[in-house]
Length: 103
Image (cartoon, rainbow, N blue to C red):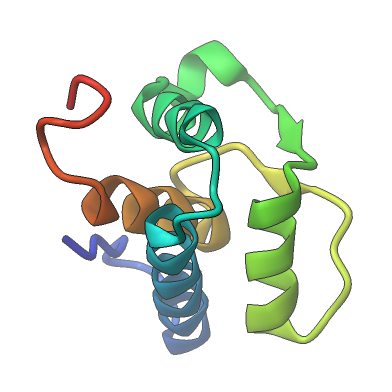
């Protein structure tokens, strides 16, 4: 389910939407290893406080944000407040069924 912050701008919501779609498509791709999907689900479930100010350079996430923004990015904040990160992990989580990966 799509989940915006109330104070996000239209462009942040658009970034979330595009990354959400990219995350879902990536998770549903039969060539995507299940360990990679599990890794992203673990990121989605982690608390922002435990990650601190971490930046991720996970290629599928970077590809999604790069495609959505049209700018080459080298890292994405590992925060549920970041629309690119949250869109991607929400899309992955929603694309896999509840009985997969212990959801």
